[in-house]
Length: 147
Length: 331
Image (cartoon, rainbow over all chains, first blue to last red; front, side, top):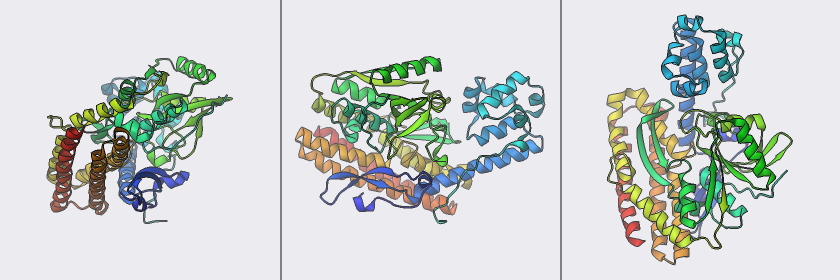
């Protein structure tokens, strides 16, 4: 990549006014560094991944409201976690966490156990039990073609 | 207290920490040199680890190992410590800062508040330097950021004790023992040999063979996984390639910069020629990412398009095989 080819596309890192450093070849054929504001193929991949997460969250939300799963699954998705990550945060076996996804099992959990989840998800016990109280932190999704 | 520490931005976090810490101790080690000597370039398909619900591909050596190899090869010693107890981890950090010693930390990215939201995933192999403390705020030099930043002690504890794969466990590390002169020349040779061995490994998921294996998988995905999943997986390859602290195309360029520098140090003009060659291969990786992004942007699952990107990847594998064989002979 030549120095003048270092991509300067719009991207999600601009929200914090940052640029990333790249290595590129200067006119004299010597390697040098240059800052890049972003690159569309990367941004599209990232945006697709975020959209996928949003879908998982809304899907989990719907199933919680239909009493098909417990709020734990919704909060897990909201925190971009999967079963193994959540299990290591609460310090339980994966199968136990999975069992807590069952609405009936969830109803019977002790406050102590619920508190462990509430701490990981950074919510109160009430909010943990009732996902309609939860305010999703806004996840920005800037597609490259919208300014 | 604030330690005099010169922050320099780098393309990749671990190399950047090595380079900045070495510079602090008076040894001028560039990022590419740290990357090359530590044999950071790698490729591996890891089918049994899922990241964001897609199989993992890594373009780099395991977290921490670049510094480990670098230290051994140039003849410095590093002290590393992991903790069970966050309090102890904090005490040890403060001790070092009081002794005027900036330290490297392994951290998780998810709770790193100064990162853009979209980049905050559960990725635990990020590295940064702490170079001071003012009240309850730590002064942070994160090599991928343009400028220095800060974290409160609560925020720092959270990222040091992130959980999941590669959990950092509060890991702290810093160089302790320096020889009078670093063994740079022999270190470069060892670093290059190791990378050649890795990339030409006779194992199906690793190195050049791993790239070929991935190409075969891509061809199959639209049929076996369906449109949606195939696009998701392809997006994952590009994300692993160009960000999440890994870098595939980008790594080829850092390696090119390394070979150029090495060519001067070892007085070996052939390395300069090979530097140009790996730069071309880096361009091919970028073309591959661009073509792949067209597929997942339009959410198309034309088998042709998948075959096309897979063929590009096979071509890259061929070029890299020739490249690393030549490099092995040169050194």
